[in-house]
Image: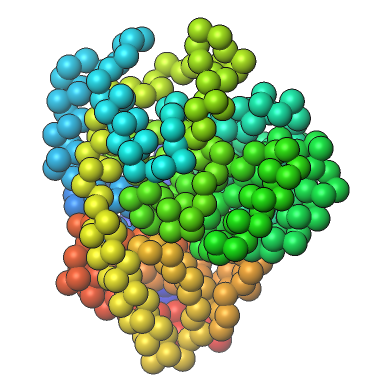
Length: 418
Ligand code: PLP
């Protein structure tokens, strides 16, 4: 066992024991794959602003914000207040609630392509409903997505995330418009929807250019298919989402994360004529769900969006630019290769001289695992795959402190590697 892992185990005995207990009742002791890492996950007991506290009492600067959803940090007081008040009014009922309508109005006002929307309980459901709407609208079954793109856990997307085509899934290369045009010209008559992330998140923060999106949109429409933009993580990049920055107007948009203020959420929005397909009085697509648009989530989500101004988004992006430069310097100081991709307040780190085309093609699996564990030892919580995300409550001083802590982690990694 290397020194980094030894230190981790020594610091976190209570989490270790809890991981054993968890493994008896949940495979791998866990119920979501993305946060899983060796030798065991920590058990967190409290989140407060930019800090998380684990079962052993250690504090961590939170640089993942529950995979981008906690854009205002943990237990943000205005969100806590909105959620508490909604709970006190009763948690949910099968009738309209005012918060859901207010949140829908806020999203429609912010994202011009979203004329109407329906809420779901996760981004996974949002992308699934978007594809079902496209299937009903076109009478076709196939989906075309980017190889290594991520659109949640539905089987017809997961195959593509792992780089394979499937019975209902075709693949092309993100950023390469010609590869999408080729598939659309070949199989366009079978394709209901082309679904794309404006920035491939789990794929390694690979950003689409306006030209790429516009060519794909043109070819998609020429083939009689629909464009679904998956903005589940990118809605934090501008008040109107990445589509506002890219000048894109998709037919449908999948949303999630920040629109729930930290609670389970998703939404599919877009053209009114497409959303009308799930009008409950004349449904072509039956869309329902016990918790869709529940008052607690939507009250919290409204505050989350209202407090996420263009100014705060720009501040976070500027802070991340400084942070990125500090990491580059720290790695150079200890002689470790480091490359990054940044999208606004999100940063993907690779411990290789250049970033791979997509995360599954990375060559630094050993190094990133060591870095992630070393970061935990120094009190920084990031995604095991090397994704770091800022929130509005992590100010310049704390970002500096996080960069200091990570430079110690990089030193540990450099000392450990042969
Ligand atoms: N789409 C994208 C781009 C995502 O990043 C995610 C989650 O990370 C999803 C869809 C799925 O969202 P959820 O985890 O809420 O199901």
